[in-house]
Length: 173
Image 1 (cartoon, rainbow, N blue to C red):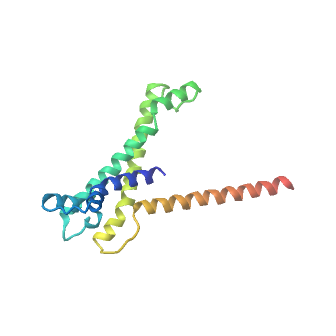
Image 2 (image 1 turned 30 degrees about the vertical axis):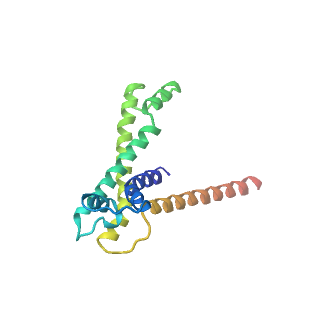
Image 3 (image 1 turned 135 degrees about the vertical axis):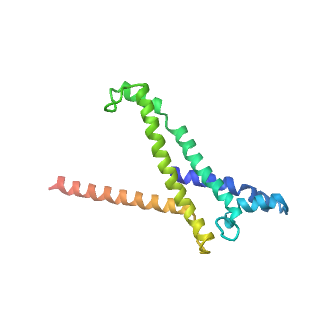
């Protein structure tokens, strides 16, 4: 879910100038035409025009930025450390309070970096196939993320139903 939001927001931010120009039927020439071509994902990763791959680099930076931004909004290590301290919980080898918060922040940065890199790889693969191999890939990274999350959720629900079925059979006997 979180990956879907990041990719959708980054891609909509990149396509906004093109959508506005198409909506108002603006014919752009010169420097701004090149900027719009850089932002258009149909021109990314083409060996014949490598300069337009700058848009892909901007896209990658935006995905990584929004991964860190979303995590900083939704997860507060200081609050988690305080809640752990109040409930008597602790991380073995780490003192409660500020050291726990610093430890959680460090671990969170590692996890978010790995997640952002994985998310970026998933998002960039369709553009690489479209640009380098001239393949007509009709789905994007967001579609891949949604498909995988639906499959994982379906597997969880099936396993849950199988477990409940086994317990019902065990308890009724």
